Image (cartoon, rainbow, N blue to C red; front, side):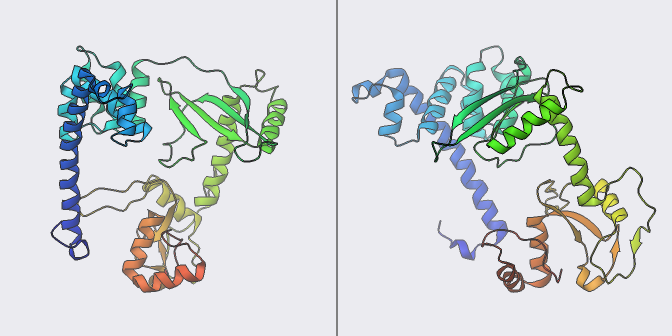
Length: 349
C-alpha cells in the first residue's frame, strides 16, 4: 500500500480492507479454476507427484486442511461454474463450498448457493443437516488417552440435544457441536474422572425420574437449574420479584438494584446494545455487562433509561472514550489484566 497504515483514518482503513477482500475473492476464484484444470489434466503426474493433494501440499505449500478444501472446491467449481461466480462475488467462502460440494447437482446447485449465501460454516452445516436429517445418536461414554499423561484417562461424552443457545464461536478444541437436522445437535466433550463420576452418580440418583438414564435429558435438567441460578446472580431474576423503584436518583452505592437489572436485561434481550455508525448492533451474548450511559462516577444514579447492556469489549471501549486510554491502561496494570484482554469496568466508571 502506498499509504502508511498508521496514517490512515479508520474509515479509509475499513475501505482498504473491503477492497482487499474483494480482490482476494477474485484471486481465490481464479486459483480454484486453475487448480481444477491442473487436476483435470493430471498435470501433477507429469510433475512427479502421485496425487493432486500431495502436489498442493508439497509444491504449493498449502496446509493439509486448505489443500483438501481447495481441491474439493475446484472439482465442484469445474462441474458447476455457478460456484466460481459465487466465490468471485464473495457470496460463498472456501469452507462453505467444500461443505456444499458433495451435495451439489445440476438440479439443486443454484438453490443451495442461494441458501448458503453469506452463511458461516456452522450455519451451512445446519442447512445441510436440515435438508437431510440424521438419526439421533445414542448417548455413549468411552475412554480416550490423556494427551500428556498416559497413566491418566479422560472420558468423552456424546449426547444429542435440542439447542439451548447460540454456540460460542471460539469453543475449545475438545468441545464439538454438530447439527443433525430438525433442531437437534450432537454435542461432544471430554470430561475428567471427577466429572465422569458425578455424571454416573447423577444418573443413578435420577433413575426414578429418568429410568433410561438418558444423558441428554439429565443434562437438559441440569443446565436448566444452572441457568436459573446464573440468571438470578446476573440480574436478580426471581419468580416473585420485590417491588422496587424504577430508578435511584442519587445513590452512593454502585450496586444496581435487581429490579432495574431485570428490566434492562429483558429490554436489551440479554445482548450487547452497542450500535455502529452504520447502524449495526453488536448483539454479543458473551461477557455482557451493565453499563451506565453517563458514567456512574459522575451521575451517582441508577435508572432504567440510564443503563444498557454492553459486552466487555464495548464497555471498555466506552470507558476509554470517557476516561482516556492512559487511565484505562493504568487500571489494567493495577488489576493485573493481561495485554490485549478487555477487563471489567474500572472503579471510576
